[in-house]
Length: 115
Length: 115
Image 1: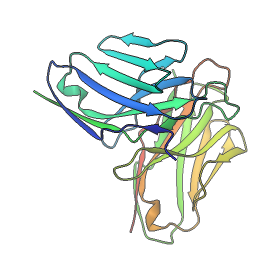
Image 2: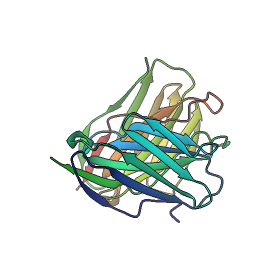
Image 3: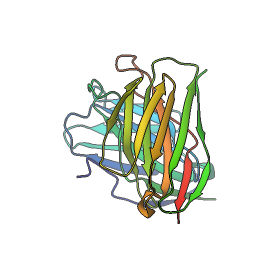
Image 4: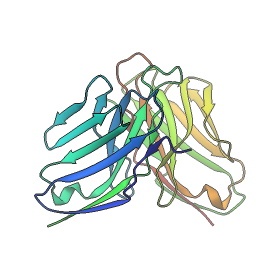
């Protein structure tokens, strides 16, 4: 049972345009959401997060939107740059879970930014 | 600053051989520690997590085990590897449950190929 889903396995976008990555979740206990970026043969690096008390969080070119009623979040990258080409993972956690800060990850979306 | 080290980076092992992957964290104390696996073309799956020395929780039944002999050391092991154990193994750490840090920081990963 996949509790976090990224339904688009890949995305191709022109440099300078907007990249929109989507993520859906099913567990209503999730209240903290994160996006990670991963290059091949490297560990994922943290990009941006959002708490369930917010519906938007922005950090430079990256903005995450959360729609709790739809159990949906998205990551916008504007403008997209060739260095953004990577796999992006959506992750979720129940912040005060007794099990610690476990993250449940989606399957990832591979982004290719064309020059 | 905190750093996480994971080794070996690459490993090729025959079926039935043992496995030991090691992870250490520096610059913090009492971290939560995690082992994730990324199988080919798939997302990140949580294998084990630990909230303290000697405390190991397993997320999925499998051919692997984990141990935490010291506060900042996390070891992933197997007595007899299977072909299905091939994948990219990632160690991660985070602050404790109420530390306010719900972000996992990942190591560089270990690529395991079982032949």
